[in-house]
Length: 149
Image 1 (cartoon, rainbow, N blue to C red):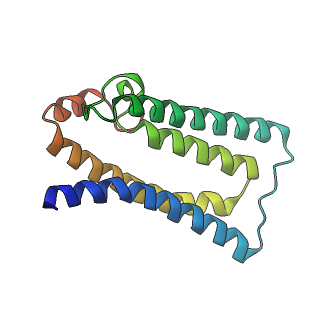
Image 2 (cartoon, rainbow, N blue to C red):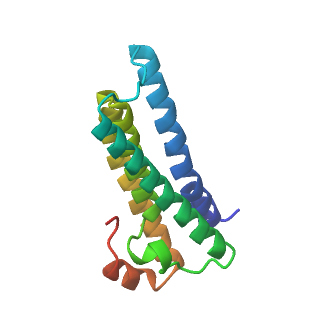
């Protein structure tokens, strides 16, 4: 296996490992502290949480659908959700996680999320470095499209 192939495998596995780690830490944090997530009694916050969760999930699924269509071609995606964000999957996940935090109104949820946001940001920077190595046109794309919003 070449050095480049190992690097690509690490880049593919790292984000998924971070999501799993985040989920495990969230579960353990609530379990250890005895904080059980309970749906918010405030109707407005309940609606906001549901809307954010659905919007974030929809963005994520649309991105997965769009990526799946171009998965085997290995071409740089610059249309669909990638027209507005270089990392639309992360945007969707951030929105969805914020919605879940509002829905269950958990300070612990947001505290752990604040710890993981810089980690996810660094992961995006690593992905961008790989994309620059794989696609010459990525630098031009990077100048035109914002990282998240």
